[in-house]
Image (tube, rainbow, N blue to C red; front, side, top):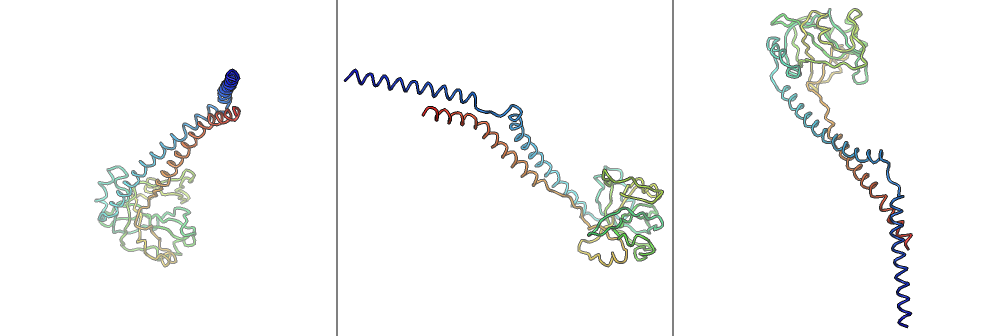
Length: 285
């Protein structure tokens, strides 16, 4: 009986050893033949979360820059309005950003015979133009350009809007503009034909004999403009500078993408060995 038990133990041990060896070989083989992501995909999986995290961090910096810019513009809007071109002159010697959006209030006369219509421009679903008119300041007798605001296309002819053509000395209130933007697809202005698609300070001032200074007339945002539109009186923009600040949305998007792709990469790199181990266990049993 003792010999019989020994033999049974030896047989059991042998089977166990064979099973263990087979299991190890199966796991090694399964691991070796388990599908792994290609090198290009693995590279992308590694790069994507790093890139997304870097872009999210960059947007954090951009957001702070935009907040500082908004604070700077709001500080300018609170300044007392400059009352003469002589007061504006020092700003013209500084970088464009220093003098942009500074409040200005001047007295003088419009030169309507050299008026320029810029557009077309949309406002509340209507097509129209921005009225840019030379303005001669009373104190210095110097000329500058004034973007008076928007009028409807139906009132483009001056004879149809006499109320919008003041002849006597008048006051203007607005913001000094040092730069203007031109869309990539915007056509070139044509002085000969009187076609203007965007405000070009240098070109339009040279054409009208003014100094390259532009004031953009503004109005109180709460002011009702229906009567002005009907009479053809140009409607200025609200006395504010709107700067979009969507950077927080971009921050959330990029950081969420970084987190998601990080989890994806961890999952993919763990998936192959785990699957191989499961197959080996099943084969062993």
